[in-house]
Length: 169
Image 1 (cartoon, rainbow, N blue to C red):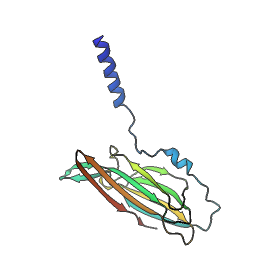
Image 2 (cartoon, helix red, strand yellow):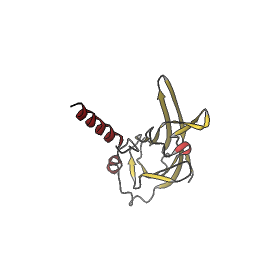
Image 3 (tube, rainbow, N blue to C red):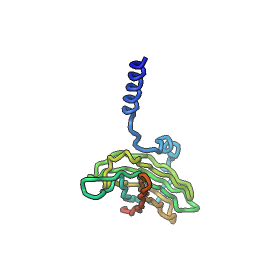
Image 4 (tube, one colour):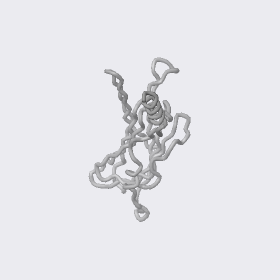
């Protein structure tokens, strides 16, 4: 009976280690529910923004890093107009594209916010990861706001900081 229990426990532990690592806690179904056709909206103004995100930071030396949970906060700053996000592409420290969270237009209603979460265990982006976010807004509408919020807590220690996107087109 003891051998049977130990074998069952070993198999259970092995199976739990083989689970696929989650790369974002925001389910991709959320993006498909926000999908919208903007082909008939020809008067929209185009923009592209760069947002720095840190899934890791250096700690003590260049050889030791500390993992962070990172959130890309995507905000519509207009209280009147819907804005449209065309694409959110995530890159690593070396500029390699890691994944695209959505590659079709999605909408954000007036004053609405959504987020992309990079889990603390997902360190693929490294110390210099970033997003390129493409968007369209109606003429006269304020630009959307994109912010990075990075944090980590261990024991009684906490670390958090923010970044803001910069429009590049």
